[in-house]
Length: 358
Image 1: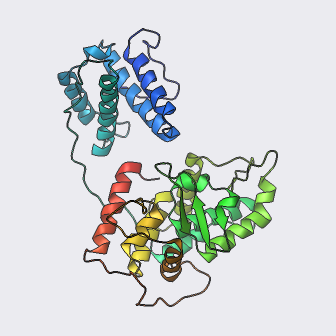
Image 2 (image 1 turned 60 degrees about the vertical axis):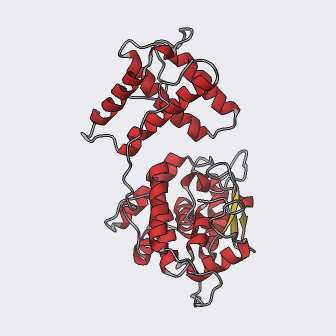
Image 3 (image 1 turned 135 degrees about the vertical axis):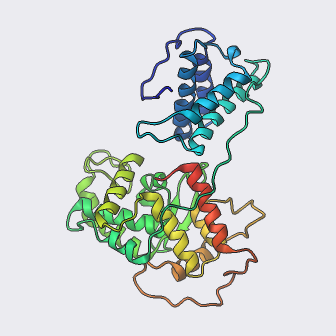
């Protein structure tokens, strides 16, 4: 099976009408329609993976691809073994097939092909697995204490961990934060262009804000130099962090805590949601925190104001400066007839399949 690597160039890159040419046109079409850079990177990698598989079998042009050939491709994905000897997960296989289905649909829609050979291509059933690990309060606190807050980098790392734990933000949402996105007076943070390119405002705890304030006062001035665009968390070079950098940082910090559980940024996302639910938060408020639903248009979940969401967050999140007694009469808490724990686990399982462990 082919292995895509950055900078891969097909042997048919300059061949008129080749799959490579049409794949590049498709990617340009996505870019023109403002798809995110992460969607573009994923589609490029998966489609060129398929393209190379075809080239190795003497298939150069889109019209040469038939339904039986696509079924052969699916079987090859099932039989493929990675360097570690493991098979591709059903999620990974489906991602490769889905990218091909989307490309052929576009090819047909734009008149580049008379019919779509992938129109009825089936996907594998994906197991609905629960998150691999959830932190207890004590384990989360052990991780928080790992960074050396006497150093600028350590203070930054503590502020990042507190942000992840308090808000459950995705890693790209954290690296994209700017100083102006924080409102300490209201206790909120604005997530700009989150998943689906949607903005949302969510609560952030007082403890997390206190650590961010300490970082901005004492550490960030040591890291920022040159043209400062206001990005909140900076590297030692004064640059915005990348998703990969943040993943490695959090993963290594969790390992240093020696809690016996693997994970990275997504571990805090799952933990925040689970602990808030266990402390009495309604599933609707947790979904608003995670940004899983469009509150303004969905008919399944009630609209939640930032004021109520902040109140619920303060009452139920364990990481706060002062202990607050939650009132059992909080409006809207646990009024659903459904099992909230089951709903949350299903929600997190869907996200894990879509985004993978970060």
